[in-house]
Image (tube, rainbow, N blue to C red):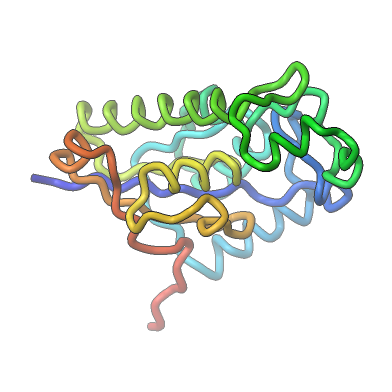
Length: 208
């Protein structure tokens, strides 16, 4: 039985002035430096082949997809959007230290959600449903190589839910433009909903 390969890639860098802030559904584009770094990564290293490319609808992801896979028309999936932080959008943790609800949310309380935002439980439910629909669609169509360009929170959460070896979300954290390749075996997927994480990407190019 053939295997299916999905390559998770975190979008490129946004403006450094936003570092440390909760940027979820705010549609911020890549910074010029972020674009340059992605092009350098694409030139100096090797991103895996993808017959299909899926991306979050936000600019920082669609722009990343165009740089890494310029020959592919990316398929935009709303469910791959980062968590909606509501009134906590564009704020840093330091700015919300006095907010008891933020402290509960930060500690992982799934019953708490940002004001006018999305709870941890709703976020996980949404992205898991989206990922399972993508995987099932790939198996049904027979497309064996694909890439998912998305956000750090989406990628690390999905890897912690489905990835083998098992690890916490923060263990899967990586820099912008980097990610992981997964191998999915249909029988194992249908039985246990798990996928083997077998390498970091992009990889170093082989010497001539």
